[in-house]
Length: 255
Image (cartoon, rainbow, N blue to C red; front, side):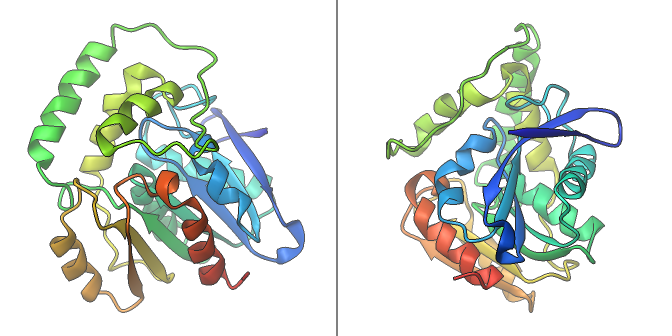
């Protein structure tokens, strides 16, 4: 475990590991309602150096979620680890932030891997989900700040059905910010067209949230984007951790 200060003085906590001598670096971003430990099983198979921060409002990082500030947080982690150039991978809401990092620092980001993409145009019933999250956001502001959050650990191989994963993930987020983080993810467009780095989008064939037809149309319009579908639901890091490791190793050339 390690930590560093972001540009506004917020302390960002993160896990780190991997192969320092590989010459390749990657930063792993979790989704709304989770924390860095959701990447635990995938990180075990990576053949590069990696860092996985707890995003704002999640895990050990205590402050209000903010997409723009999260970009600065990630760059601060990269600087603290001496990662002049790095790739970035994000699941769900972390995917939109990964794209924002690549857009903000195109000379530093080498590859972008998006797992289970999630934004307004790609989510089925986005308006209903948005309304539910807004209500949740309002109700959860009444809850006290949580301390000593449990880690989201899938190392026991337990595979939850999609409708139970939010309950499992709530162990890793300060509850008052769960709806907040999801609302931010819905409102942040995951545009691919202006990203210079190669992009790999990985989705589950049984992802009930994803409008696959819309995703395919958007990907077909981008020359540097590639789509991989796996036999799984939305939570690919739970169901296909080793496969995601292989995809990242292949993209970075560290097989």
